[in-house]
Length: 176
Image 1 (cartoon, rainbow, N blue to C red):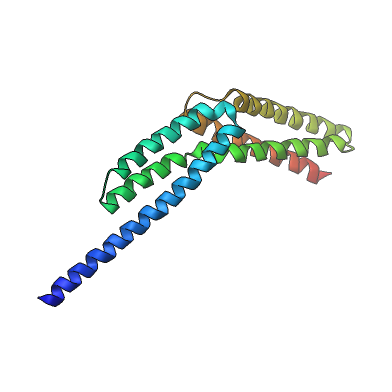
Image 2 (image 1 turned 135 degrees about the vertical axis):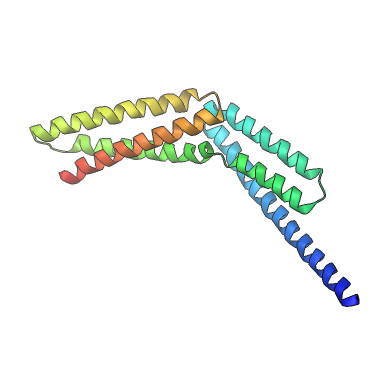
């Protein structure tokens, strides 16, 4: 009987320790994600409203978690807060800025190239398409969007367009 009680107590201690570890891990992740979002709100002021809204949603989950003593439930709520803080648009904002810069750099390389008539015609078409995408992306980055869902959809779409433009420019540069 004593050994049975001992094993039950040990199992409960192990479970409690595991739950506690999950809570600590989630809290560390939350702190990093919150700092990242605050930095993005400064870097992309037109997205500040939706970033702050997502931060508030996450904070509500964190507040709920702080009222719970059960480690598993607490970890679950903190995990939900982290999912909110790791919204796709949060990852896309810095990525799209980098992709935009890459396309612009490749455009400069193409402009410095000496091209024959056929290559010039091809380059003009590719450059025009790239310029249109750049204008669209800059418009989105300067004006922002209404919701996190819209940001997720638009940024993924425009990121894909930028990668396509970058590929086309790379092929043009490589063909020379």
